[in-house]
Amino acid sequence: MTTETKKKNKVIPIILGVLIIIGAFFGTKEYIYYSKHVDTDDAQIDGDISPVVARVGGYVQEIKFEENTKVNQGDILVKLDDSDYKVKLEQAMAGQQGASAGVGVSESQIAATAANTSTAKANIEAARVKLNLAQKDYDRYANLVKDGSVTQQAFDQAKAQKESAQAAYTAAQDQYTAAVKQVGTTQSQLAVSHNGVSQRQSDVDFAKLQLSYTEIKAPATGIVSKKNVQKGQLVQAGQSLFSIVNENSIYVTANFKETQLEDIKPGSKVKIEVDAYPKDDVEGEVYNFAPITGAKGSLLPPDNATGNFVKVVQRVPVKIKITKAPKDVLEKLRPGMSVKVSVSIKD
Image (cartoon, rainbow, N blue to C red; front, side, top):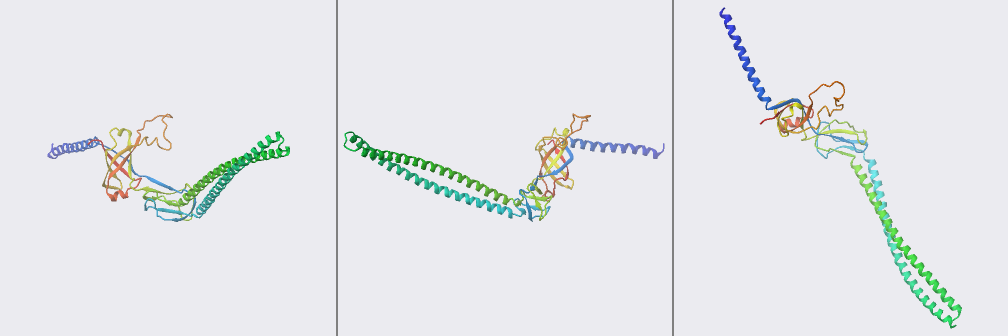
């Protein structure tokens, strides 16, 4: 055996030994890492997205924003032509004024009927006095006619006066009762008038509300996207105009395999690697777990009771809140960006 062959026979075991040592080192390192972490690259940036819809119909008069720009909550972003709604408000206010005038008429009628009641009551008292006088005259003539002190004609006249006074007294009582009922009727009419005013006030409030809807405001602070409206366009109530990605609502949705969930708990620390910014440190913590798997929440969930069954490991969405990130990176994160997460399962 030559010297060169001997050297080759010595080099090969050395190389194999080095490779084994390197493999053992990295294998041990990976084992230690995965015994303390759970990773997945099936994750993405997510966020709260507020759709903005028109609450009333009308022609777009003015658009006060540009797509993909930041807006603040309460900013007027779109203004619709409000001419029709102003007319409706004026009509409602005119109806309210008419109803208020009706209340004044009803109050005047109550005052008038109350005065009539006082007059009717006074008439009863006057009729009662006349009836008492006529009754006394009748009684006196009734005693005198028996012994012939007065004529039958005088007695008949006293009797007629008594009956006339009785009828007048009864009529006065009936008039008083009618006057009291009239007061109750006018009071009921006043209540109806007040209800009419309340109804007209509701019409005014509704007209004002509809008018306010012609100014479409930002429901939250964030970035405007998916603009679907142009100046002069006729929009309908309920039509989607654009969306706003809420500021400070960015989080991560990671879809872990169901076999990875055993050691993941709310509050677990998470290392987040954003594909777009891999060199920046982003950290978070597990917030909560979805109540269903991703497949079960799809439009057409699989039905394992039909056909041949093949077991597939399911994935469960896990919400991760971002707790630490450079400000410039956090401002650039957008829902839909791909990320890789690593959850620490042991301290």
